[in-house]
Length: 289
Image (cartoon, rainbow, N blue to C red; front, side):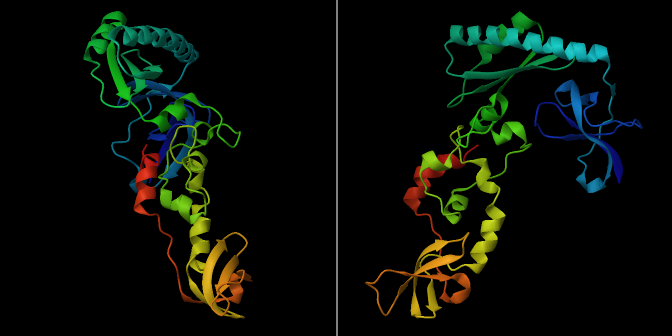
């Protein structure tokens, strides 16, 4: 077991563990720490806590110090520098006629490195751009290509539900979301209805998946052969939330399906939820990051 603090370096970003070096810190405090990118100023998202050793990614680095008022001023100054660097980089991208979209710029706390985040449809040869930027800023330059989900997290916006993006407000990490989840939740496999503003599958499909998985274990699927109080038949429609089944009875196949509660039928042979190959190929890109 070890005492750690959890530190974030951007809003709703991933939490990293650091050794508090014997200091008691509270949520919201700012600290100076050393990261793989250099010396950074982060916000304490998790106060001193004892956690098992297996949850720690070694080596656990010690906090350098608690941030001073001067450090906070420097962070604000860096934010102003980032705005100017963004404009300069846009100009350089235009001059080099590069097919890339600049998303964000970050200065490390110690100004030893500037990171430029961008999106592009494919690989971009930005070697000359890096040379130009290094000449202008006289420091280390790193260009990092990110995906559309990371772009949405950085920029923010409103989802189709009318609320701010989940990834911008509370999701620390992206969770895997699949076409299979949409199918199991009975959603129309229409890209417009199951994809977010970023053009990928909506993160919220993950939220209720465990509940749907549990319901699917206890509910016959479409195509299942069941025994009902009125005889045997095939399930033609299912409402997982209400537990209602529409069953076409063998004794009257041309009649309208009868509706039953799940508890009123006995499963003889279950059906399967399938996504055919054509659908998968059509929607494959929605699963990418």
